[in-house]
Image (cartoon, rainbow, N blue to C red; front, top):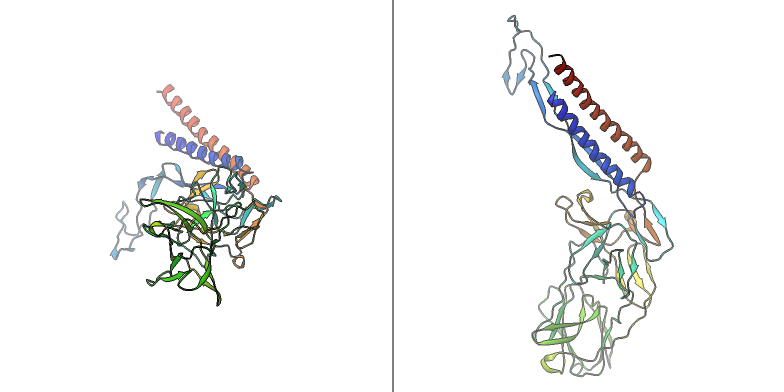
Length: 410
């Protein structure tokens, strides 16, 4: 009877956990992009009363088997094993990442993903501490950044994402002597109120720009005096200031230079810049540090539009390319609260790429993804959990009555 008590107690505990999962699903029935969970049960070890036996003459592992009855006859058939189960346990709590309904809100800050993938958000503007979310209920903070309800920045690439990428390295660096930086484009916070991203020089005849393509060791030098160039414009990127042991260094372009345009008496030349290239600035100031000859114009916070492939264009400002993070096993992600996930041991590493409408994956502006909780199913599961819990409690009550009967009649 002790086995019955322990088995029933374990059953009550399992159904209690099931009811916890059901209750959480019902509580989040209206939570943006919430994914319903399901408690999966499995049995525990069984107590073996009889191992069973094979029929007479059967071959097991290449050996002939002979069974004999109590009378010595060898014509006994096979006997099944006899085992008594020792209870039940919650084997896993599975998260269902099927698509929730898309609900139109009319709010341009709201974004919804149709198909697979997660938005990338981060609590930091300068490192790779990324979180992932399906909830696109973004707003704009006082600095023009698009943020989640808990203040995490929506991250975007500053260049089109071709194919897929395993990561976005943050590799802006400042050297000693000249102001050098890598354009191995990182993810940056989506901002609707950026400064002008063009670096323009037309006055300092000593300005030089060394451009080294990704994978090359031979730099191309652009100098206003020696080549007769009268104007140099770097398109894309954000003007940054870095501090090193050599002092404050200005006029670096962070992360997203896409092209260099030079103007001379012979015309205009455009040099395309690929991710991973290196650009070095030099000038007439001490240590070759450019401290002037850049034009910054403050933009007012602009409206924006988002294309189905995740291209976010700010009116009068930057263009961002929203990456979607995909995982081999989304159910392996770890919930961190606030509709956020992090990669887990069994989720696989994130692979980033833009939405692909041709493969039923797109971003919709002015929509939110609703919870995929099926309230009817959850109410049914609640009845199942309640019935299972009560039935197991009846087993304990019955065992207790039997024990009392035995004690009273000894």
